[in-house]
Amino acid sequence: MDLNLDLIFRIVGVGLIIAFMNIVLKKSEREDFCLYLNIGGAIVILAMLASELANLFETLKTVFGFE
Image (tube, rainbow, N blue to C red; front, side, top):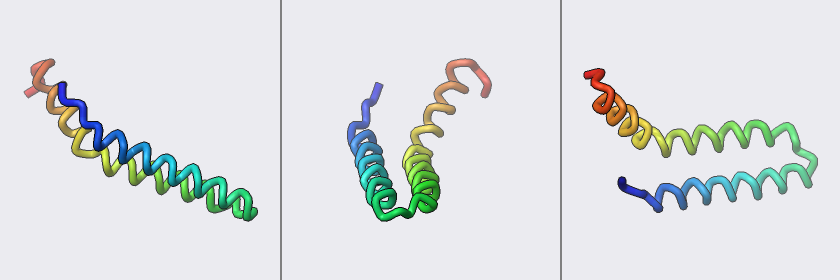
């Protein structure tokens, strides 16, 4: 099984940036933008994971014989 540490570090980096920006927005009394920031972060991470999810589904189709 291929463990892609680069992808994991990029996800952790995005998470840290989002967490820091949430703290800054809450301190500046802009809680309304925190929700948009979290949704945007989730979309960015899902876009980063799209190819890995496609590989997972192809492997599952092969294992269970759905081809």
